[in-house]
Length: 131
Image (tube, rainbow, N blue to C red; front, side, top):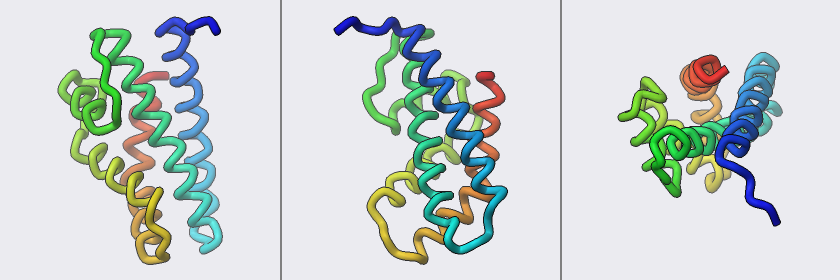
């Protein structure tokens, strides 16, 4: 199997992230129907995962830094100026982890509210910055 260059990997991840945020924007526009909550959370999960992986690749390309997981990637990206609001990104990470392993309606509604009120704007800001 041929290894993909870091530039191509980053370009692919960036494209996937931009598509994921566009999907998340469309899902948020469909809300507030109760049955949409799961779709909203899954779209957020995909967008957030694509975002941190895109940050990881960018750090590796620009700074030769390899961060194996989301938390150090976010911390390093914030320090390097790739993202402007590290605390919100850490809250997104917390919600992302919680959404993957929590199955109660109260938690889902809390996360969905944060997606609509805070997280979408932050992910969209990052998407605009790298477009």
